[in-house]
Image 1 (spheres, one colour):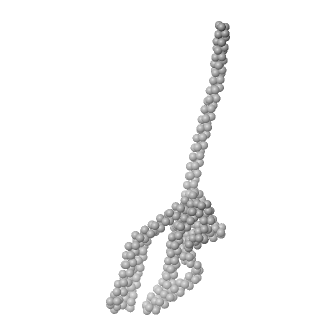
Image 2 (image 1 turned 135 degrees about the horizontal axis):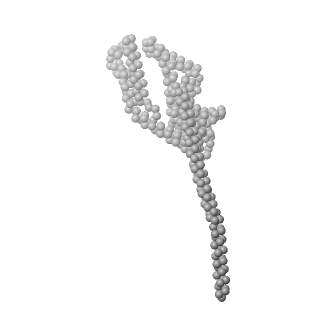
Image 3 (image 1 turned 45 degrees about the vertical axis):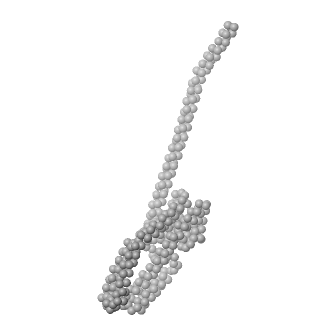
Length: 336
């Protein structure tokens, strides 16, 4: 029994010695493998952080590039818009006829102007006015009245366009959100919207058929529709085509801006009605007083119409009254 116990103790000691020797030999290998694993994990984390930093840097550079591209586009559009506004603010009569929607040539317009001047001169002669008033009536009828008529029709057409344009933008927004291409949405407006929106978008479609892109065709809309809203629409389409983005959201915001501008114009008009009523009363007062004086004592006021000095007084009074009306009109009209 003592021999077996000694053998068992010897075996245990030998196994312990072998395990200690194996641990001593393999410790360095295990420790080096553990350090290698830690280094690999650190390198992986560093690569991940580097990739995230690189991605963040790329996103920042992309945002800066798009911002710079957008700023350059805005500067270019602003320069083009300034040059275009110079032509729109004081366009020639041929352009004004197009903006008024009148399909007549310049020769016919001059013929109509001459006929209008002759009619006004004949009317002045028929009512017994002095001969000095005939050239003035001829000039007013040939130069002033036709151009005033064209400007009146032009302003009425612009007003009708502004009343319907936000609805057209809403239709385009819904069409784009439903998956319809922008070109098809523009063609839809060109065929279904009321005048004058339909004719303006029809010109855009015709310009595309002639080879122009949609942004270029839309930027030409202010040439025939002289209002800032048409310029806004062209700028939005141009920026979206160059910088990208959500077109439906941009057009929806533009529609809201146009409706807010319309509300602001209506508010300004309501606030200025008192001043307009005062201007009408002041402007009509001389004529009313002259008519009442004529009814009460005709001989007292007739020298103004029969004597040369009276004619001179009426001329001076008319000039000063025209200046006053012009000043009051400028004070009551606000650009929004």
